[in-house]
Image (cartoon, rainbow, N blue to C red):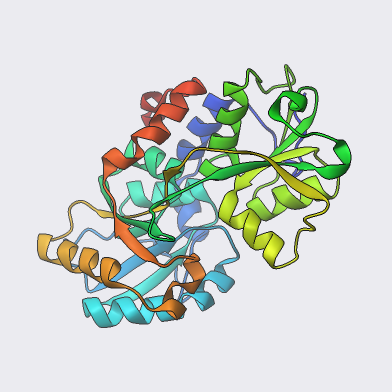
Length: 311
């Protein structure tokens, strides 16, 4: 039996992802987006060289907070590209993927898995990825409530495991694959799942005892410890994943080549610490679609047929 901490109905993994990219209508998605100007990107950006570039941010915080934090980023792009920039925050990964497929956004900051899903139905290409400590890769961790006594993945059997968003790479796909590689399957067979919606909520669920174990991004977990949101004496890391490609920035493939080059150059040249602060990064490194084959491989481990998700 699956535990739903956010009270949302959980279906099987394949149906989750199919719903993820197909369930919302364009009208609903348009109504659910917010931008810096307060307008929804309801009209598709068909032009190859639009005067206004709609730039979608990862929907991992409240829209108002993200827009405010990224004002410096917006101004940087406007200066470098000589374009008006409209920051867009969708309600979730699903609506962001749909916005990309319908060309309602020109640039988008995806998680690795949401990028792979979006790529199956959108003409987009990755061009830059987060760079931290000189690397464009990162890790996930599986953490446990210290009081539970769990110290290894083998001891997760029979416990409740908290994940973040169902389309999250680092707080769902990677941790679940780590458990699968240890011979543990979800759905009540070996452990119960609890989807909390975010990385922070995963860590808090484990700390509060609502779940004995949880999976999330290593950088985010370290940040939660550093900011004392999570007590390091109550939550411990029991396993770390291998390195996976960082969150990519994508652009519409049909943008004018000169504009695409200017966009790529602007991102790769960015080194302003204040502008980069919302991304918790040192800068951006070059990225290409092939970098995300490892994410596609993870989907295969979990028996998720990406090709079927195009329907």
